Length: 114
View 1 (cartoon, rainbow, N blue to C red):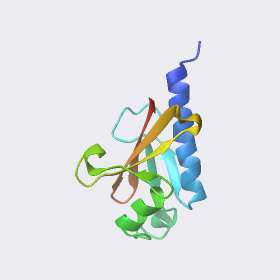
View 2: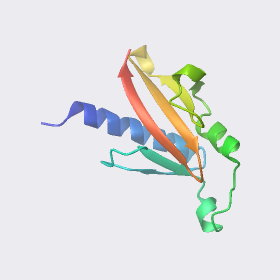
View 3: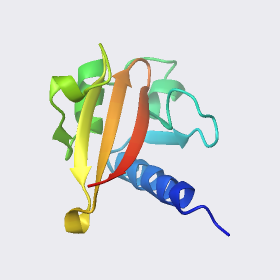
View 4: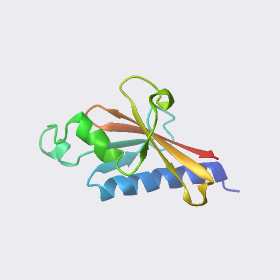
């Protein structure tokens, strides 16, 4: 019997990764890591061009959160993190994304019933 919550979480991560790819970024899922990030996003040229910053941290975060509603500061997890929210069709779920600009963007996805 499949785990419905796991499958929904994976589907959300894949949707976020597709959105990032459409924006010209590369993304990797850290499946089963239970760590800080569910997805690591980066500009593909930042690795092939010798770890140079193709985008500034602010530009990278702006690109990742493009199309997401910005979260109010008190809803963001901590310092040097940025957050956004999308509401699913039918407004049954909201998706929250938290991003941290380093050399890449570490993304943690949350799916919550409304």
